[in-house]
Amino acid sequence: MIKIPKDILDLMIRQAYDELPDEACGLLTGKEGVAQVRYALTNTDHSPEHFSFSPQEQFDVLKEARRNGQKIIANYHSHPASPARPSEEDVRLALDTHIVYIIISLAAEKPDVKAFYIVDSIVRPCEIEIL
Image 1 (cartoon, rainbow, N blue to C red):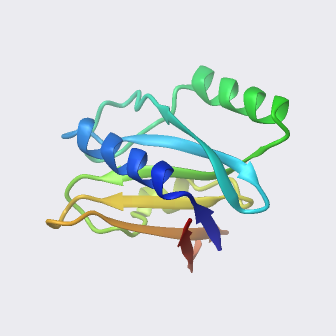
Image 2: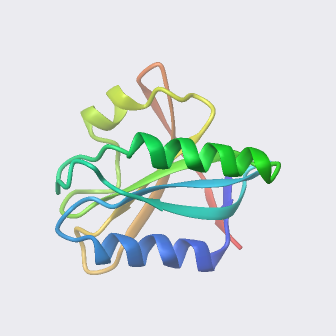
């Protein structure tokens, strides 16, 4: 399970809308499965179908998280026109088995946010608790 404060979730969803038509992306840091800080990162692909993090931004988040006694606990991105489930590319690129992967779908009238564990190409749902 991952626990996300409502204000952080609201910022993630706002970012997804703001970056349309492209996918938005970012990282969540925290402790013991509780998100404490959201980092909106640049989708260097500038694409509505896939994303890549800026390596420098990703490294900066890791340094700041360590400095604050936190870890990267989740990777999130949006799907502007497809469901909130990992695509084949999402599964192939999910290399960190210790984090949760969150997808924000904007395909319907209301945003749909789902979380997953992805280990060895096996996708399992992860419960989200909104704080």
